[in-house]
Amino acid sequence: MSYSQWKNNVEAELSRAKEARESGNEGQARVCARRAAGTIIREYFDRQGTDTQGMSAYDLIQTLQDQPEISVESREILSHLVQRVAPGGVLSGGIDLIADANKLSQALHLE
Image (cartoon, rainbow, N blue to C red; front, side, top):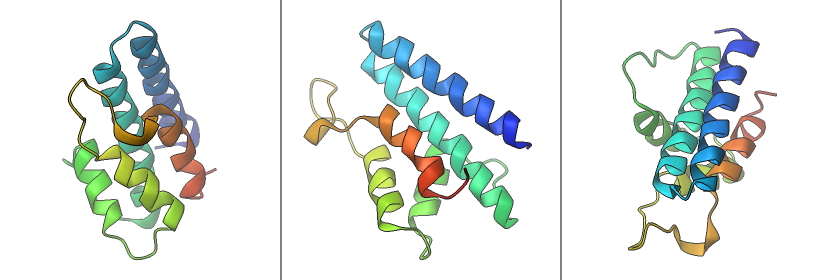
C-alpha cells in the first residue's frame, strides 16, 4: 500500500473515532482507534515483508507485541490497545487510545 493510502486509512479511522467520542460512544471510539493501529501495524509488517493477510487489528497488535525489536514506547502503546475495559466502559489510568494510535506510526518509525 502506498504511503498516502495507509495514512489516509489511518486518518479516516481516527476521524471516526473522534466523532464517536464526541457522540458519547467511547466503545466505538476504541474500536476505530484499534483499527487505525491495525492499519499502522500492517504497514510496518508489509515494509518488513511479513505476510499479514487475514489478520485482524487485534491479531496484528498481539503479534507486534511479541517482536523483540519493538521499542519500550511502542510496547506501552500496544499494551494500552489490548487492555480490557473496566466496568462502565472506561480504560484505567486515563488511557486515550486515539492519542496512542496517533503516536504509533512515529514510534514504529513509519513517518
